[in-house]
Length: 119
Image 1: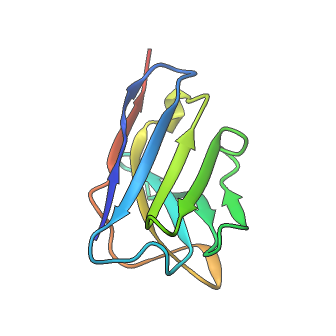
Image 2 (image 1 turned 90 degrees about the vertical axis):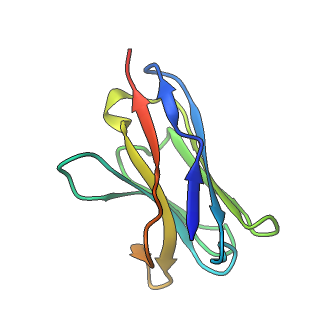
């Protein structure tokens, strides 16, 4: 199971740092990514990082504001979110990614962590 944390409420322009930890599933063994979902919408891709961490990919909407990173020794994944906007409000999830496509999630979803950006 993957467990997301670090969400909360923040004003526009603020920052949050999300973390993903593994319980029974290993983060360090696969490419990893972040996704988000708002009520009534499909879950969407946010960011991805390759197994070794040398390659990253971002959705256009977050490029330049979010940064994904991983620590394979500590089996953790993080998402640094800066310059947050109200449209970033969503439940954020981490998941393993397919090696052939860094935007394709694999495996089950955790409970996610809520991020709310509002003045």
